[in-house]
Image (cartoon, rainbow, N blue to C red; front, top):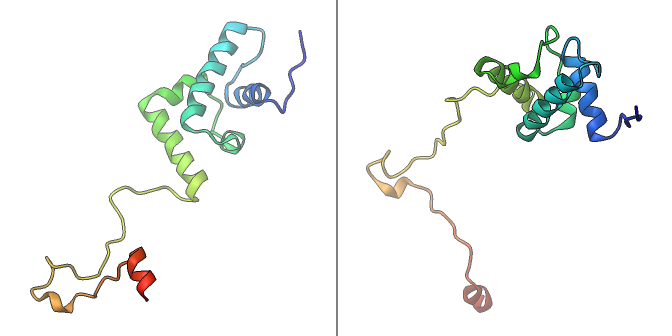
Length: 126
């Protein structure tokens, strides 16, 4: 059997599969190939290598196909948000611009004047 470089993308995938899946070994080459293919498809959506290196589930999985289920995908998205933002993104909560708009006030003279960039002709004249 040829030696696989652990720093190559394929070697890193093998290390991730061995760490996340219980009983993952080259004894069952078809099962290992399936797990590597599932990981490769998951890495298209969650593409950062360090994310996969840091991912630590509570217990080893039977198969990475669990991440393809609705519940598993939601757990993976939660971990992805923690990795990228340091916290879980809560959808539906966002900051609202508090500046008044014409719909909010009756008189538009209270609105701040928006400045616009000068055109080339205006800039040349000044």
